[in-house]
Length: 256
Image 1 (cartoon, rainbow, N blue to C red):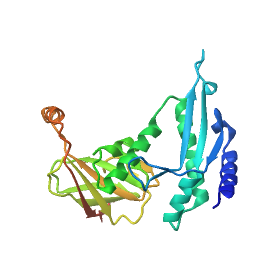
Image 2: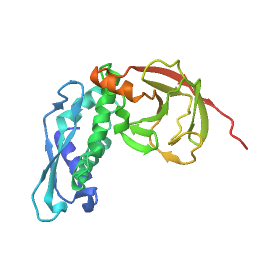
Image 3: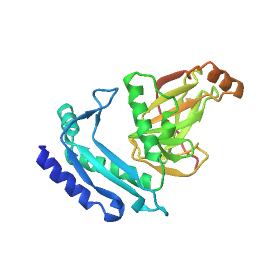
Image 4: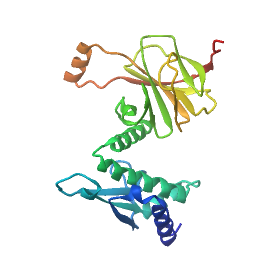
C-alpha cells in the first residue's frame, strides 16, 4: 500500500470511531518514516499516542489532549517480511490501540502500559534474552490466576511437586503431567486442546468461565517461596530459575 492509500485508509478508520471515544484527541498524523525498537532491529513502532495534560481547576477530558501518529514506513517494513500482512486490519488495530492509550490517560491509569511491557517481555523470552519471570501478570487479567498476553493464555498454579495438574478449557476438564520440581517458575506449553476459546480462570472446583481470544495455553507452575528465601534472593540479587517444557493435555471424564 502506497503512502496516499495508507493515509486515506487510516483517516477513514479514524473517522469511523464514535466521537465519544475520540474526545480530547486533536487528530491523526501520518508520517513516512520507519521507527525501529532501540534494542530489537526487527521490531517496528507502528503508532504513537502523544499526550499532554493541562492544569485546570477541575478534571475532565478537556485537560488532556492527545495526538495519534501512524508511521507508514513501519507498516511497509512489516509488509515486506510478512507475506500475509493485512494492511487495513493492522491500521485498525494500531489506531484503536493508540486511542486506548489516550483513554487510559483520561482516567489516569496505566493498564495498557503494563500490557505493552508484558508484550515486550514476551518478545525477549522467545528471542532467548533475559526476561521477567512473572511478566504475564502485567497482561490482561482474565480472572483469578489467569492472564492473557497477545494470543497466549497463562494459568498460574502453585508448584508443590504434584504429578498432575487439572484445568478447564472450553468447558472441558483436562489434565497434564507436571515436570519434576526444580526451578522457581516453569512454563508448560499445553498441546491437545483443540483450539478452544474458553478457559476457567481458576482451578477445577471453580465454575466461572472466562471468554478469551487466546488460542495457546501455558500452565505456569510457580514454587511458593518462604519469606527467608525471598529476602535472600533480594540481597543476593538472584534471579528466579525458569524452565520450560511441553505437555499434551488429556481430556478427563466429567461426573454425571
